[in-house]
Amino acid sequence: MQEFEVLKTHIEGKILFAAIDSPPINLLGPGLVRDLVALIQLLDKGEEYKVVVFSSANPDYFIPHVDVTKIAEYREIAGQLTGEPSLSLLYRRLSETKAITIAQISGRVRGAGSEFILACDMRFASRERAVFGQLEAAFGQVAGSGGVQHLTRAMGRGRAFEVLTSSQDYDADLAERYGWINRALPDAELEAFVTNLARRIAKFPHQGLLDIKERINAISLAPVEDYRKDSDLFGKATQNPETKERYKTILEKGFQLPGDTELNLGEVLGTL
Image (cartoon, rainbow, N blue to C red; front, side, top):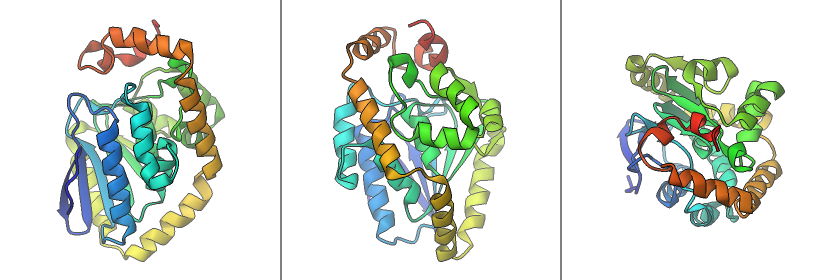
């Protein structure tokens, strides 16, 4: 097994467990994007990992959002796989990769973190610790990495509008009710549930799992052009003076640092 920068991995039979470990708060930046590129390339070679389970080494933060100071850098790294500087297209490739992917969620998962778990095939979350949000509207941006596509299909039009325009935080029970995740589970039961599910799936023939995944994707994934459009809109908005000013303001409030701002970001965004 190759070494990764941010993903801490271990293998159990045909299951690859990958814990996101990027202190202090697991921001999505160049290191994690490089690891995702390498992981997708590894799986695409036909390595016999039937299931990949993503979790977090930090119980308070899964992926709270991107590192807003390194957007251009991580987009360029994504382009090493997709041919275009687009996190959205990288996530779509994750949805198509040759393994069943499961997100085991504890802590904050907002913005591109939310879009990461939506790109996975299944999502299970800690009832006590998981917090969900799409924060882009507070900065004058579109969710640029698949959130519009996934959430509208999963939730329906009205709830997608609520989530994508409010920049509010949602707990795991409401996320389950809205269709954001498969299930909310007690924190003490989450890891065992996901591990047992992964073990069960890994017992079954690989080609059958891939055929099922291909057919579900054919029905549920938006066309590549829609992901590209969202990515382009997000990228253009990062250059808007108002967006830059809002980033500056919230960085001064402790954005991207451990503490109350990140823990209670939905509330803080409403004050911008």
